[in-house]
Every structure is written in structure tokens, then in C-alpha cells.
Length: 99
Image (cartoon, rainbow, N blue to C red; front, side):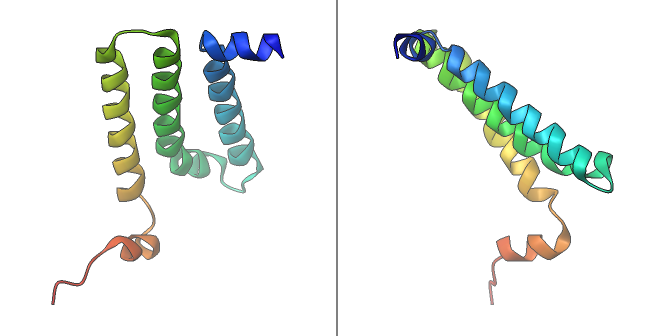
């Protein structure tokens, strides 16, 4: 239990979570019939998650707020890219009727 609390307090748990996130992304891509296309579809989402986890790791270590804000902004941009690059069939779910 102490090892887990130490990993949480010094931010190493976030590094572990980032490694798991990218391992899942690679595994899902490799299991696809079109691995490169699947990786491209998942990459922006994984980048967004990576930025969020890195920001959390810095916050847990008590680092300066500038880098945390930069990572949060990067996560938001990656999330926006993820939404905008979704297939057209999914994009209509995010559109609004203005009539």
C-alpha cells in the first residue's frame, strides 16, 4: 500500500497510466484489419489523454502552473482534433440545427 501511495504522491502513477494508454492504443491498432488507419483514428484521443495524465502528474508533484496549463490546453486541442476528424456519420451527431 505504501508503494502505491508513494507512486501517487510523486506522480509515477501517471507515467504508468500513460504507458497503459499507449499500449492499449497499439494493441487496438494491431488487432484491426487496417492498423495504420485505426492508429490514426485513435491517436488524437490518446494524445489528449496523455496530456491530461501528464498535467495530473505535474500537479501531484507540485510543479509550476504554467506547464500544467500548457498541457491542459494541448489536451483540449487534441480533443478538438479528435472530434473534427471523426467519420462524417459521427460528425452529424455533433452538429446543431439552427433553423
